[in-house]
Length: 135
Image (cartoon, rainbow, N blue to C red; front, side, top):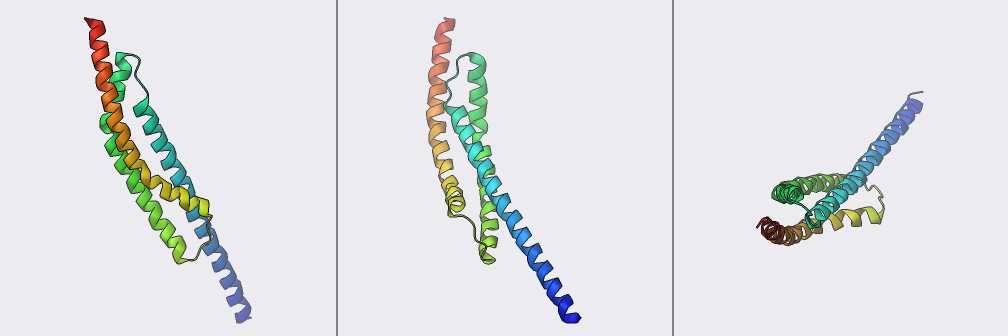
């Protein structure tokens, strides 16, 4: 009787552990996807050429706040890394494509930095263009 209860308890604990690990894995995948989409949005917004003064001001403000957004996304990626390390500790088998996607996100801050330089230059040129139209 006690042996059967121990076995049932062991099986239940194993199922709970597997479900927890699966939920952590899903959290990692979803968070990495969200980070990717955020970086894509940032890059696209910075590189979209403003067509009027209102868009110019909005883009300038967006560019000004971008380093804070990049830092926040980098911190989220560090959190995901810790979760992947935990999955490794439990020898959880995740798909290679998911970890590759995770590591791919590490290059975004450099790309965003480059886009910021290009975007700031574009904003300066647009300011000159809009100012000359006022004259």
